[in-house]
Amino acid sequence: MIKRIALALLLIVFGCTLFAQAKPKYKALNFDNPGSRRILKTEAGNHYYYRSLPEKSLKLNTNGIEKLQIRSFSTEALRKPEIVTIIAKSRTTHSLKQAKTVNTYAVYDVINIDIPANTMSIEVLCYSRSVYLRAFHVIPPKPAKAVKLANLVLKAHGGAVSLVHNGSSSDYYSFLPSQALKFSVNNKRNAVVYVRPRLLDRSTPKLGVYHNGELVQTIDFSIKRTTKYHVQGIKNLGIAKKIELPINDNSSEYELRALSDHMFIA
Image 1 (cartoon, rainbow, N blue to C red):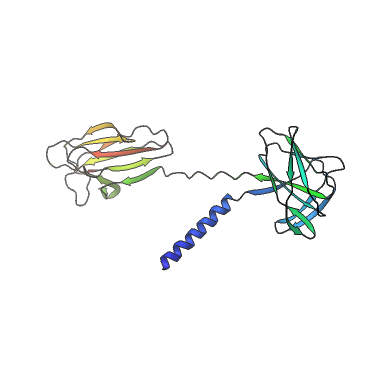
Image 2 (image 1 turned 180 degrees about the vertical axis):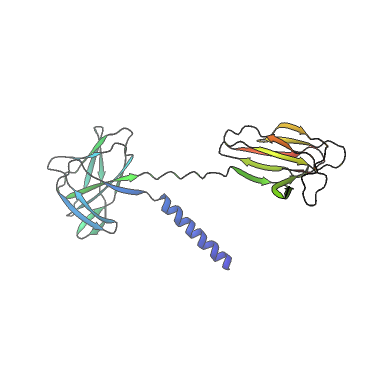
């Protein structure tokens, strides 16, 4: 029961976060030639609304703007209120529908307008002298910041070990025929890998280097043993080889696979 409640709360929070991110933001846009004005006080804020000068239209600078929202109210009840937008000499009539009453004013539903590309300005015309208008610029949402990947991401191995040399130790990872060493390298970084085999007999240790699922190199190791490097619980370590991985243009998947019946550490 507790788990269900926690999951429900998590989904609610997640949903609210998505809603907050998706909700558009608006910024008031000034007319180039406003006439008289009145203030409208609402829960969303207090803004001056304008009507044009007699027999004139209101002009808006829309350079770089893709979407507008026209808000309006009237100081008196009107039978068929409407406004006209003029974009590149093309006229569009918008009927105004009353949404609510605020302080005896008839507040109308917002009108959303898509602005064609490269439109420098538009005009808004209203024949009724009791209607006041305000334009709001729809602010485009900021693009989500790209999450930077770690330069190296380890994905699979046969177990972590500590390689000791002259009192210092280094972290290594083992891999076997049944379990490859898999990792990704990101952010256009290139990498090298130091690999040692565990020797069993006089058979030659062999491994394959895979780049994005494709075998690009087969490497044979010496059967000579080292006496300077040690791993607890692992005997007969061989001489290491430095392997330069294929060039990474952006992000690449790499695998080291044992092609012989040997364990390797890398």
